[in-house]
Length: 244
Length: 320
Image 1 (cartoon, rainbow over the protein chains, first blue to last red):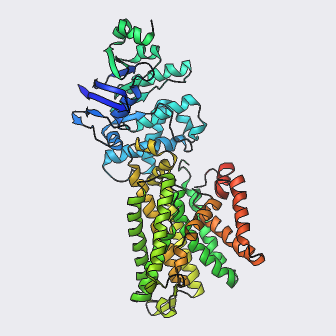
Image 2: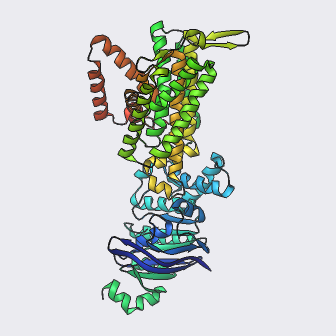
Image 3: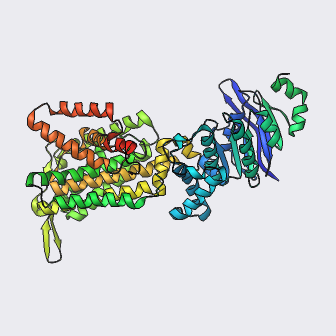
């Protein structure tokens, strides 16, 4: 079942074609990795999908609905959630408040009311999400005092609290320690049981281990697409990306 | 700031209000009048703080909202013979409409542009009060007549400029503004306002239309400032263009920065200290603004988050 389709999506910055006629199809429930060298247009592509950047041409359809001109906060409501490459949690707020911001939003959407349900209900949701990413003991801690790895987990927790249908993770394992990467992979697989995951990732072992399908980008275009094994065997990809 | 200790901060705020209620029985007449004025001005500062402290928008034009309330109440009572309550509501409505209109335009800008746009609007407002001098009597202003400020309740009544009535009505305004701001910042909406202050881009990616929340904050802030202006006109009877001038846009900024932007009690503390700093130093020297300036430089150097902001960082993290 198709979740997301981009049709000939392009974005030009001056004379540069950052993303050039990319047609991407995401199926519901898959873990899709986008790989490619720096400047290949990966972040620009997902930024257009989540609405942070407007496309120069082309279209985006989510659940068979055209969302090309939709404002980013409406896309979040439809289930497209983006977690940032540069960790951008609210450093001065507690972990609880960080997740509560997202949880109260999805709660008002779920109930169709203006106001989220009472504090107890909210707290329950927030603590459950924090527990799921392994931060349950840190609810009261100021977010900026967390270690880098924990900040990345908090970022994911914020995303999860929005109850995404499509969760976009932009280089989630960057800067994580080896054991943190292992638990992150497990978490991603767990998330993928109820949401589709679109992952920009540089760490090839991670991609090979968790992705169902891999899309390779170069110079704003899709160079190849296939299962991890196929991509590994693709001569063109090896030339462009692995440099061999 | 998890909201896990709501009781403690309610107690603190109620204690402050009770203290203000209690001191009226011991204050000498001079300070009695001063504290009345401080409570009205602190309400103005609380309104200002919602915008600068909790939403992160620095306005340099809040005098226009204060003046909208001041003139909205003053003109209707003076020229149209409104009773004080209707006058107050007219002032409130004027500030509400003005803040919606200004917000729709000014919030298209951000940062320095927002400061300049609000400053320009406030200057335009100031010039309007001079232009319509026929009604406002411009810089000179006008004084509301005592007989217009009589409030009748059942068989009895009282006059607004009666010191005790004035003090307790100022306290009522202050109480509503203070507890209102506490409820707001502790609410789900307040959490979003703080998120807008911290990182507007990120807030949009959490599914919030940041513009609407900024508009809401500006309207609450402007209306609260207008309520203070209307109350000032009715309790202190003087309505003049000075209150629309830039000075009254800068003063709430100073009060809030001194007490602590983004703390609910900071505006009261800042207004109180600044008032008495000016009061005491102007008794000693004619260049009292020099002392005020020096105090502000010290503040910026050693406690840039204001008194309560610094205190919250170092000692009492649960302070709202």
